[in-house]
Amino acid sequence: MRFNNYIITLITITVLLIGQAKAADECFEGTSRAVFKFNMAFDNAILEPIAKGFNKLPEPLKNGAGNFTSNIATLLSIPNHVLQGNLKEAGDASASFLINSTIGIIGLANPAEKLGLKAQKEDVGQTLGSYGVGPGCYFVLPILGPTTARDSIGLIADSFVDPFAHITLREKELFSISGNQFDYLTVKGTSAVDFRADNVVNFDSLEKNSIDLYASFKSLYLQNRENKIKNSNKSEDEWGNLDN
Image (cartoon, rainbow, N blue to C red; front, side):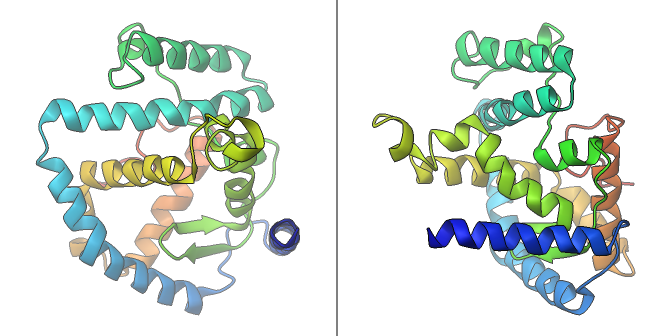
């Protein structure tokens, strides 16, 4: 019950923040910059070394891990395509997941892409944006990084929409033989490492050439989210091409 009350309180505060800022205004810039500094220290000390080690894995193993986490992410995309009224995309994503989970050996391979089924990643934040909900306040979360009030609500709602979350985070509520919270965190963590590993050079370049690294990350995040809502982002990376 306490957890439910916490969620309701957090959603209420976030809704108020969205109402206060239709554009992605800075509501807590001082705090966000401090959190950003902490995140960069965490990246330099932990995430970047892990990502560089991940890049040294044999190519089939590295690609298999990336394919597996991307396939799992498709489960969140399917209901969001439906909520946005994109039934064709929902069908393509469903077919992609089915093919990769069977012929692709639980998603370790990606035969669906060779058949022209390239599932586009969707989440609740994008769905809210497609309905005209503005980003609201921009701020930075510990470890999770940049976000907005709208995307924070989306992040919470994702766990209720995502089938993978239901059979892991809420395993005791559904099936005694389902996954567990460790499985969920492992997949999410592997996905983050895979993304960081793919962008080692880009991150280094951005850090080296940015006058204000905080502002650069903010601009990249907001631009990428807007592109994703408009379905105009051709890149599959979470933040698009970091060379821009």
